[in-house]
Every structure is written in structure tokens, then in C-alpha cells.
Length: 267
Image: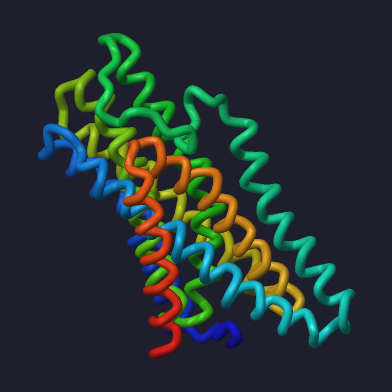
């Protein structure tokens, strides 16, 4: 499967990335209208997202990367450069995690129903909005590049990214809402934290598309696979386990892989 750079395909990829990013607003709305979050559902959903991402990374994106790299290099050299890009993608997202302090890192899950005391709440929400935005930038690039592969690849990934953005929206909106009493402000900052994803997509469009070659395609696919695998193991699965529903999260992982696998088989 190759990347199609037609106008319609690029626009569709941008729109899908926008949808994924704006799902932080869904998390904000959930926080407003539910007294407590359904943690079983979140465990299942986060596990499902991880299953989709891991499956598509190893079964679609990496093979596509190797196929593109084979047009330039042969044999083991092709696989070597693909692996460098794969682990390079992991390194980028891991470096971002290292730079952001643990207490303010949206990838370090905590009890989303927990309430802090007065003065720190608003600051906590604003810092979370900023740091989530920083994390979402490379996710936006990954979503956009993956979406160029076609709708059969794009839709499950967009849904997976959207699902894992929902708890991030909750994490931003809860402290801001409880410190200001304003649903509008909480929704605004929560939604803005997701804007980094379409910004990342625009960055990819502006700087990657003009130089797109089989080599760039291979590096991007492998790096995207690395980013998604890292997010799955570092964020989604630990987050699902944090809620205390191990079997629900594992069921989600298996369901995500099954949905992705049979979906690709059908389409």
C-alpha cells in the first residue's frame, strides 16, 4: 500500500487529524455531566486503542516502510534503516516525556476523579493543557501521515487517538472547572490542548510533503509506528491498568487487534 498525495486525500487526512485532536472536548463534556467517570469503560477503551495501534504498527506501517525502503536499499540494509526510523520515532516521544516533569505529564496517569485544593487547581489545568499540547504535536504528525495511507488504515487510528484523547480532556477540564466554576473556560482550554494535533498535521504537510520520496515515506511510516507503539506501552496500557480493571484492559487490547485485523481483511 502506498501513500496517495492527491488533494482530496490530503484534505481528508487533515480533517481526520482535526477530529482526533478535538476529541479532548468530548472528555471535557463527559467530566461536566458525569459525577464519576466509568473507569471500566475507560480501561476497555484505552486497551482497545492500544490494540489498534500496536496491530497496525507491526502489521501495516512497518511492512509498508520496509517495502518503500526496499526500492532504495537491499536486504538487511533496508531493514536496518527501517529499524533506525522505528526506534527513532520512539526516541522522539520518549524525549518529550523526559522533558516534561512527571507531576505535570499527561502520560503519567492519576485518579481523574481526585480533587485538589483551591489555588493550585487552575494552574494545574493550564499546565496540563500546555503539556498535552506538546505531546499531541507529534501525535498529529503520526495521525496525518497514517491517514494518507487510506481510510482503511486512517479510521481505526483516528478513533484510537480520539479515544485516548478523551481522558486528557477530562484531566484538563476538571481542575479548571472546579477552580473557576466556568464550563466555558474548561471546555475552551480542554479543546485548545487538542489543537496541537492538527497543527502537527499542518507541519507535516508544509515540511514533509514537498520533499516526499520513497525514502521519506519509509522513514515516516517506521517512525509513526514507533511513536504509536511507545504511546501504547507507555501511556495507554499503564493508564488502563491504573483504573484497576486488568481484564477489561486486556479484553480491549484483544478486541482492538481483532477489529483492526478483520477490518483490514474485509477492506
